[in-house]
Length: 111
Length: 187
Image 1 (cartoon, rainbow over the protein chains, first blue to last red):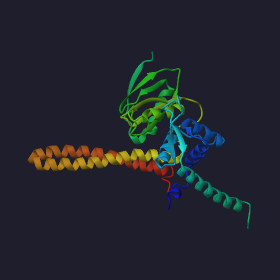
Image 2 (cartoon, helix red, strand yellow; image 1 turned 30 degrees about the horizontal axis):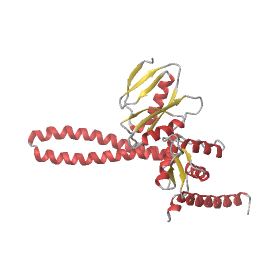
Image 3 (cartoon, rainbow over the protein chains, first blue to last red; image 1 turned 90 degrees about the vertical axis):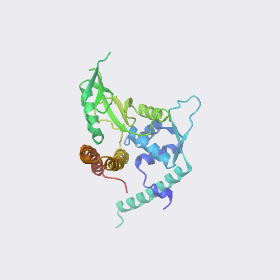
Image 4 (cartoon, chains in turn yellow, blue; image 1 turned 90 degrees about the horizontal axis):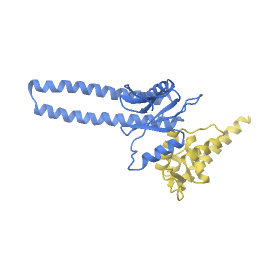
């Protein structure tokens, strides 16, 4: 099984972090806020959950640290998505689309 | 200036959530932990505030490699004030208490399972390391001592190891149960 497929399915936290970073590099707090906004307030990432997720995603090479802008707080670590990260996110979206299509079809009553 | 008080306690690693609850209850009564220790933590009395505490297990974070500062900065941004660390692995945080649901550091099953497993893995490593030490000690004792001396040393040593192994074994089993209770590891 290839590396991309091994990561699937992603947890909601992993998924939304990758989605957030797809738009632009961000730091932990920014991601947490963006995830909360995108999920309509449903998903509030705890500090430990976010910290663990960032470490895991970085360890798997799906995200990478990005040096902050001049004069930015050095402790505030910025992250960006990698090519591998995009590949995993793409594969996950495809997988979810298949699940959704099958579920919708069933619910809309094809007897 | 707030008065400092010390309190005895004996929380085991696998009961860290109960320790959090205990700290929260004390804080509700105006006693707030300021330095977390293994058996005797420091508290400050202040009836005008109330906190929610969070205990986190993270190894390998030091000032030198810069990871500790990064870690504390991230938690601070998420609303958690850094209180203290114990033995470089347990980190204590708190945030002003708010009515409603108690805020948690770990908000999904996967990251909580990972946290539990991290605690369990360290116990397993310590258990195995102690097994090696036990064997080394025994070879030493058996070859160097004889007669009454041999038993005088062996029996207390064995008793000590029985306690250490039972505690660690209990801890490992307890973490296993906690992992199962929240739905287990993702397959």
